[in-house]
Length: 131
Image (cartoon, rainbow, N blue to C red; front, side):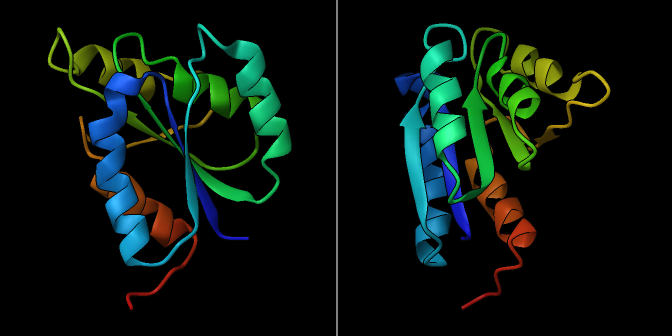
């Protein structure tokens, strides 16, 4: 199924997720939004990833250390799109964290706070055409 999972590291990342949700809703692509921190809820994240068989692409939104996209990519073969969130260092800390994944743990990364571009990239991965 062409379902997209949007996973936020924190509820404070909701505004960025809303940008992705707007695009997916416009294209009528099924999605779900979850708040699951890689640091605070690692067991819940593992469980979700194992049980999300109907998900094709994952958008992971996080700020600060921004470990969420890399942790997810290390646990699944599904494409992961990282969205760094602006914060104390204007999001540069999160951006650099996401683009510096080790070999074998790929994460596609869009610009800081670019939830819209993350959703548009997910649509391309799913080969969804404009309505």
